Length: 267
Image (cartoon, rainbow, N blue to C red; front, side):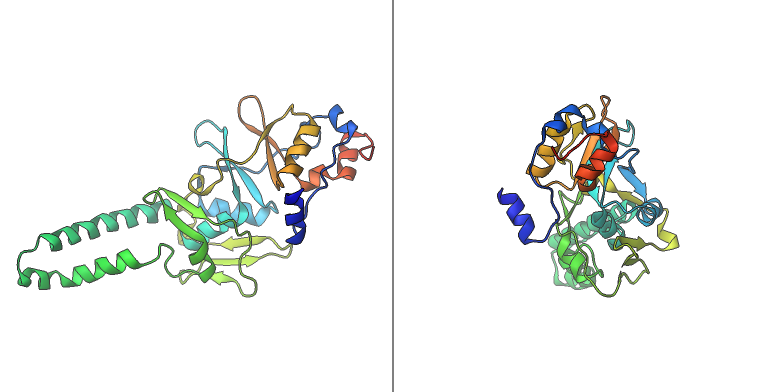
């Protein structure tokens, strides 16, 4: 398969695309990990910080704020980037207010009829020009400047598919937020005390189109989807749309499946 060749060339771990007869006997719920660490569409920065510190997972299902139903999947590095950049709902609202004020100042400049009024407002015009040309993430790292952007008039946050942060020293903002790697090689972030109660719009950055399967899905179909699409995470849903489990590459390892099902997965 071209996808597997591409993953092999990039040194990404992957599973062989080989369906065995015993896979048809089981369902994906027989091998999934449950319960699952999940996030809400909006979470406090301090809660996300603790989840990343306690968990080794590379991605997390996101639940609807009101119904607890699955709505998307967000990667660990995306969460880290949101915290490192300080992309909080409070700051976004403040920036939108500042942007509206800047537009108002610019409108005044446009309507100004005399040179005297133009000179009086020149300082505000300079501020407006700087606001328009500055990058959204401001004084953050070069990697984050390249990989985090706002779209749809600020309502969405797009983080690139690059799943690595720069190696070497930890990345930090002047405010004190620090991004580092723990002893297990997982990216973690430590936010300042003042920012722990700030709210992060997780839903704005999550992947709404991530593949999912129902808990009664035959293991053969889930395995085929996982390997054919080169997935790393496959959320498992119940009939009510809730997240009941998740499957990663380790869940589909032959030895692991044998321990969970008691069946010989090599034949």
